[in-house]
Length: 396
Image (cartoon, rainbow, N blue to C red):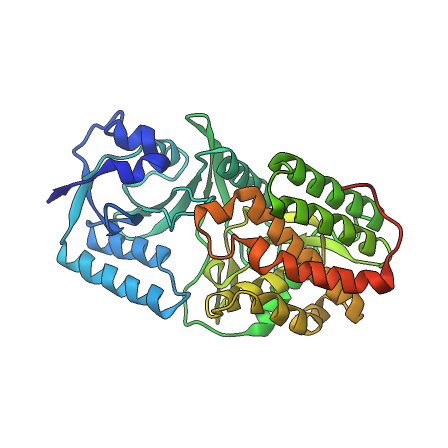
C-alpha cells in the first residue's frame, strides 16, 4: 500500500485532499490512481469489485486504440489490486449523496488530461453496482461558467426525442464553486454505427430555438460576443489581433447572406456520445448555445474525428471546407457560399474558444490556432471578400 502524493491533485481538489477529508468519519477508502499518482487522470475504487467495474466502464475512453488499451490495463490493475492508494472522501460527495436516493454509494473521479477546462467529475454507483449519477464540480472561473451552463442546458434539451440526454438531478454551490448532478444516459447494447441517427439527433438539437432569433439580432449577438472575447484577452497577443480582424470580416460577409439560426451541443464528438441499437445518447452539454448557424455540430464532429489521426494540423480546415456542403445539407444548407460562410463561422468560434480558454498554454494539441487555423481562415475570408464584401454589423 502506498500513500498518495496530494500535490498532483491539489489544483483540482485542494481543500478536500490536502485537508485530509474534512468530516471524514470512516477510514479512507482504497483507489487506483491512473495512470499514476504523479499524473492522475482517473481515480477508481478497488472495492466492491462489481461497483468498481461499473465505474470504470462509465469512465472508459473508446476513442482510440491506445485509449482502449489503457482501459484494459486499468481492468488488470483493478483485478490485481496493485498500486492501490488511500484517499479520504471529498466533501462534495456527502453534498451530492444528500440529493440522491438512499443507498450505500462508492465513487470514482475522472480528471482527464491537463487542459484549461479540466475539472473533477465524480461518478457515483451503489455498492450493488447500479450507476446512479455524475457530479461535475467547478474549480475556477472557466469551469464554473461551464458547470452553470450545463445545468441550464439540460433544462433546454430535456424534451428532445432523437437524442437521449442526462436528467438534471441537482445543482448547488460548494466552497464557492457550482456543481451539477446529472443522471447517466443509456449506453447499453452493442455499438451501432448509424450515421443517420447521429445526423437526426444533431438536426433536432439545432432546431432548439429555431426561428426565434432573427438574422440581425443573431449577428449583433455574435459580434458582441466576439468583441467581449477580444477585450478580455487584450490586444497584445498577435493571435487575438488576427482573430479580431477575421471576426469583423465574417460578420460583414454574414450580413449579406441569409443564415438559419438555431442551437448546437457545442462539443459533439465521439467521446461525448454513444450510438447503440437502442438509440443515440449524448452527454457533456456544458458548451450548449443558441443563436448559432445551423450545422455547427456536424462540422465539429467531423473536425474532432479527424484531428486525432492528422499529423499536419494545417490539413484539418482544408478537409472541413471540402466536406462542408455534404455535412450541412441535412440542415437545409443548399448554397455552397452559405456552407463556406457557416464553416468559417464555426472555425472562428472554435478559435475564439481556444483563445478564451488559453488552450495553447494548457498544452492542447489544437490550442495554437495562430499556427494552423487563423492563417487559413484569413485566406478564405479574403478570397470571399474580393467578391462578396457588404455592409458591416457593428465594429469588432
